[in-house]
Length: 212
Ligand code: MD3
Ligand code: FE
Image 1 (tube, rainbow, N blue to C red):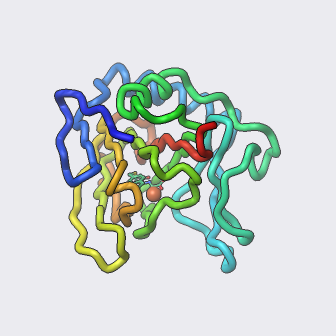
Image 2 (cartoon, rainbow, N blue to C red; image 1 turned 60 degrees about the vertical axis):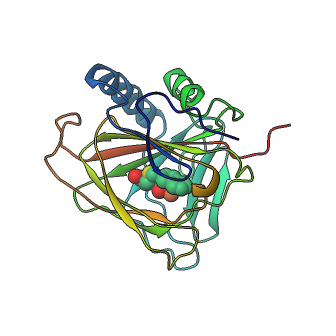
């Protein structure tokens, strides 16, 4: 399942297509406003580590038919918000449109995980492997403060490289990069004016189930 790369794509590594400045300021503002509306319907929750229950520093929500959650029982996708018990809000149409441009060959996304970073939030090095459909890429969109992103290989000990993700950047991970270890080392407070009060929003679009 290949990723269609527009003329602005930078091949960072095999399977990684980076689109710096993919969303202009107006598109970032429109997407921000849609995400803020989703967060009223599906308030951010603080996920907890499986077994230990230790809270993550990142807060999360989702839109689309499925949402990623994590607590003492483990990581999983589910149809309902873990605190309100309501179904997740619909996937924003502009997210479907972005998916069709960056993951044209893949079946439609089922989850958009919304990660919210304050100035101190981090995300440790991990793989995304809770999806049954590993042939589809994961598409990431960054809004707000700049993040220092770390990308490794399929084994935890593989060499890593760092990349700065700015507001409006898109990046797709497919093929040989789909199971790459990755994380967020830190964000740079005050680096963007997009979000009142600062911070960063990362959206990741995912296909979860195998297409029929
Ligand atoms: C490489 N999010 O939600 S986005 C995550 O910025 C996650 O919030 C980070 O890692 C964030 O799981 C990084 C970039 C990213 C997302 C998914 C990937 C890179 C990926 C899946 C496979 C390989
Ligand atoms: Fe991840």
